[in-house]
Length: 474
Image 1 (tube, rainbow, N blue to C red):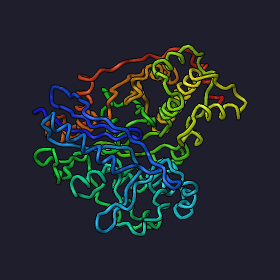
Image 2: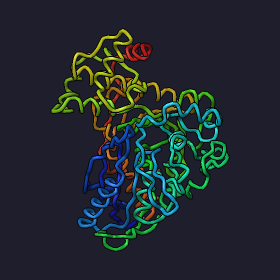
Image 3: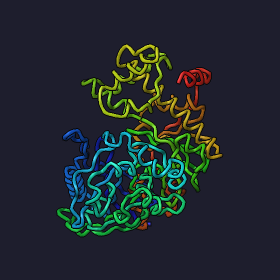
Image 4: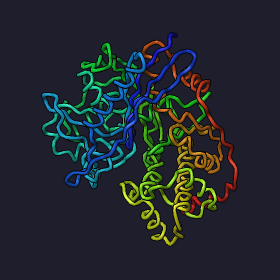
């Protein structure tokens, strides 16, 4: 295999970056070229993504990468569920709305009056979240004028190449993809009253979308390659597992905790537990629960200007564990805002002690996230009938040493943390595989990660009974 260098565009809910990745038989290495913020904009009571600025930042980052490296391709991944609508001329019908916007309040009940929740789950296998694409579409007044729906990575790829399509791992987050057939759920779409024609042809990770039509500093026409464009799908592809008996937590703004399966779990118990069946690389199923993750900590840091995360974590380590625990997935914590005050109000409203300051608030967040992981990892094993010998933490949360140790303590399982840059690595490896420069299967890709990326292990310690008692308080 010949080594190649590709550009990975990785868009998160709070920021984006363009990475150059060099991949081949000897390993994979990343170079951050350009980083930029991703700040939503509130206008007229609606929260939007500033998509044109994001596109401009992506183009700027790609041009910077092309000046430093000879690129063989580029791929784009992002968060799921959000989309842009195009009219018949291909023009964008307004800025995409942010998934944290309140427009879908009450909409799921309206949709379920036509398509019952159990029927929707049986077809799509997707966890019910009020911001799922199906509910956003039902709340979209511009739908009557739309000719095409493009999820965020597909919209940017369209502007780069002129080619329309929907990459399947991201399409699987919409609650509009038939999980068994891996095709648009046309009967469900019709029953919901959504226009069938807006849903574009599906793509699989590794397909060549087309060349960039306006190179503008990128050199020769660069192929845009469909990667696992849902960022979690890219991240899970790099879980450095040596066997099948593992659970994972993709830890970032959100935490996605689950297992990799060959087939979806569509039981009534799975739906009641709010587990989701999303598509992964090579037709695998990411069977997981979406959990509130480092969002809580990110929002707190906004309220404590000048505070150092390292200092806060050090201070939290001196606070006795499990004094303050919340349900991090309570809807009250979903919108942006004064998170320390919300945490205090949540506890006070239940007659619990309230954190006295930032260190105790951070300790509350870390303990509460570990408890949420404990529950999710136990439930995913029970619901899937599979056993996990180890928990892999990938993504930015792999750098949070206290949280990794608490996760081992809470679950009673060894934790392997890393790679921290899982999403970008997955993006790069799928591109490299398409170009013949990386292993052809997931096992080979994961072996390459194990051999070349720094990983850290944590063994469970502490009082298991204390974790059980804290869980019972919730």
